[in-house]
Every structure is written in C-alpha cells, then in structure tokens.
Length: 330
Image 1 (cartoon, helix red, strand yellow):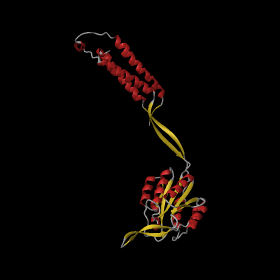
Image 2 (cartoon, helix red, strand yellow; image 1 turned 45 degrees about the vertical axis):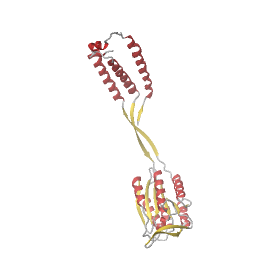
Image 3 (cartoon, helix red, strand yellow; image 1 turned 90 degrees about the vertical axis):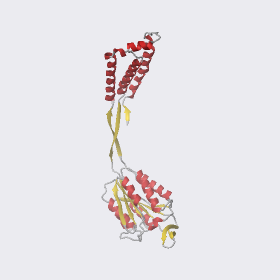
C-alpha cells in the first residue's frame, strides 16, 4: 500500500503557484520588447526561442515538487501479521445414505443442501482446522483436519450419495470423527453431525461412540434433516426410467438429543428445509468462536531517495541549459 509518512509537507506545494506568478507576471513583463516586422528573423539570428524559458520553468517546477514530495515521505507499506492462540478443530460428519437424495430440500436434495451449508460454514471460519467424514453403511474420512480450505471445498463438492449402501451407521460416523480429533491439542474439539435417519447398521452404536467423544472432550452438534411425514426420492425404473418414490422421514431425534446432551450441546437441531439448516449452521458458528490474537507488523520501502535523485538530475539538466548554453536563459 502506498502512503506518505509526513503528508503535511505537501502544503509547501503552494510555493509553485507563487513561483509561476512571479515568473509570468514579474520577470516576463520586465523583459524588453522589440517591435520589428520580422521578429522571427531576429530570433533565428540570435538562436533564441521563447519556448526555452518555459522549459526551464517546467524543470524548476518539477524539481521543487520532487523535493517537497521527498519531504512528505513517500513509501510502500507491507502488512505482516503475527497470529497467536489456538483455533478450533472441527469434523463434519455427513450422512450420504440413499434417503439423503430426498428432494424436500430445494433446489436439489438433502445432501446438496448439506454440502452447500457446509461450504457456507467453512467460508466463515478462519484459523480453524476442518475435516470431513461421510457415512452410510460404513464411514470414511474424506478429508483429515486441514487449514487448506480450497482442497476441503473441492473434496466436499465431490461427495455423492452412496447408492449401494444398505443402512445408516451414525455410530461409525461419530467414531470415525472422534478418531480424527482425539489427539488434537486445539482449545475446542467439535463434531457437526448431519443425518436424516436413524442408526440401523454398523459395529458401534451412536451412544457408545458418543461416550467415546465425551471421554476426549469432544462436543457434538447433531442436526436432523428432513421434513415431517413423507418425502420423494428419485429412483431409476428399468421400464419407465426415472420416477419418484415416496419414503417416510424417519429421523431419530430422540437419539440425536441424547448425543447432544451427553457431549454438552444441550439438544439436537431439526431442519425441515434449506433455510432452517443454514440458520442452524449460523447458530453453531456463533457459539464456536475462535479466540485468535492478531498483531500487525509493517515493513516499509522508502521512496524518497528516488525523488531526491530526480531533483538532482533536474538540477544537472538546468545547469546544462544555463551554464553550458547561456543562450537558453530567459
């Protein structure tokens, strides 16, 4: 960023109008005037042009301004930051079972809405490590804890529905997330769990995984997604092609509430549409604030020597005009 360290010196620029007034209204008026029908011939003989004095005035003006600008302290400042404090480590556990393809969340489906608000949440965080676990019949770490949000966003975009899954293993999703957080030295460790069903498969049940999270001081924000009643999911019929089949929404809010209570987040959230899901994420973002201290340092590149050199160069040019070629004097 360009700045002036002593901008008050610019007030001296008022010298320039005074100098111009002095030259044009005093010096030039005192010059003797010759009345001759062929004044151009006289000028040619004398080797003198009326434009040379104006050139010297321009050189003087630029030289004065260069000195004034140098006194004002022009410089480039480069901002550096020293960040101290510990951020929050967050694992986002996202359900990718077939029911997450239900189209009750506009404009696409539950999974796409979950991915959208996850990106929205990531964009609001700074200095926090974030990772992603996806789960359906099994659970997989899609991205370990990272500060590289660009990679995180790309991985999040590539997450798809697991069409081959035969159930939802919420317990495995939690356990996998705990495995990624248990050795963390962050001041706060958090799992954001997004699911639209109930645990019906997997070797670890949700409450066992929750107790494991509690042992390591990990909080779980549980979010149940899906409107009440029935929702439609797209299915591919071998005869009729793509059609929609109604499924009953079966979010196990009782278990999600128990998960939240055990880990200190009081109660689970329920989102019936995309807007409610976004509001829930906003609420979690407000509760999990990172305490980071930022101290700013500035490195300066001083530019005044260049303007001093310019004024010296202009002085040399003036000397060349006035001493070596005195005919160029006003």
